[in-house]
Length: 211
Length: 211
DNA sequence: TGGCTTATCTTGACGGTGTCTAAATTAAAG
DNA sequence: CTTTAATTTAGACACCGTCAAGATAAGCCA
Image (tube, rainbow over all chains, first blue to last red; front, side):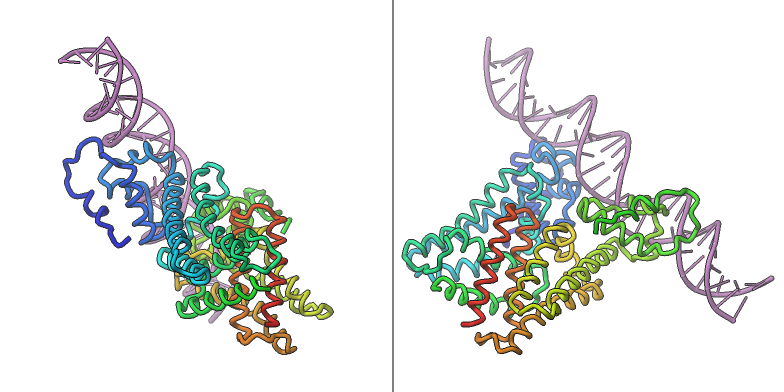
């Protein structure tokens, strides 16, 4: 995600064709860039349209609402996060313990590298509103990647705890999410502390699994 | 918090004195009510001023910014939460285990009963900005109430773990916060599940302490 | 090819927002 | 009673999201 070239490029020439070509994607990409750089508050549809080189109301033919655009940005985030998780889970050479640690650390990295997008992804605005059903689906697909890990543990008989794998996944994801938020919201400011807390949390989790 | 009488009362008579009396407090109370009922997005300074029966720009003599007002609302939340926690911690008749459980459940209750305020209290907007130093202080005082619990455990020799009490408090608070957010943001929707997850999390914590 | 339909984009406008400046009003202090 | 400081007000500015009508281009069927 270091490539923000589409921001500056699209504004370049004044005589663009009437039809943009792939306006929806261009809007989405630019929105992701803006939100990561300046937060949700820094995104206005008018500035966005201007940046992409299109009129103020053009975006409304691709996104019903500002909220719909935000949901798309959040969805992009969940897809990226899903990729990170499945990469860790499907790393066939690694033992389960390191799969878990890789998933946890990858998750935390994403949250701390893109804090404003992470806040959007889990904010009330998109979860209370029943409008954004498709976004909620991709979010749940992301969570399923995480659950898969615990099912693998169970299959290999590595869980002695009575709790069903789903419950364990829910519990530990809540912990992970809490740490991610405290870190990305700037409440736990020290990165070394965060790393340390995560490591001991994983260690404690392994104790719980055996108990 | 069932008493929102100040909302409707203050608008009543048209011929109010030029000086309001305690405008700052009235603005704060009304803001808390609005945010709890409609979320941060539902609060506009103009509607707020109208509601309290005062001109559009009057609030600016009591709060530098809209952000400053939001910080005050968040601060009020932390004070209320502090009260809940210290009430649980200082319940002298209760054994430590039930103190912990009371604190955890009180915390979750607050988050689920006032989700929009909870979101404000922990949002990036107020934590990234160095402006709101006093708000961050009251937040940290709140956290200290929670740390106190683990220090009590340590004093009574009930912690066999190597981890220092502060670290344990940080870890478990992260977990608690994560669960609270998933619940209050509407991601974990089922209240029975949440209650259950919290209980098993506390049980697991007690295992960790002994280990 | 020509004409119809549909998708896409634009211009103009409306009501709402945060907040700045300058003036007015009142309470408090000397 | 006079001066001063604290409050409150009115007016204005630049933004914002989004609605309604119209202009433009592309796709499709004849």
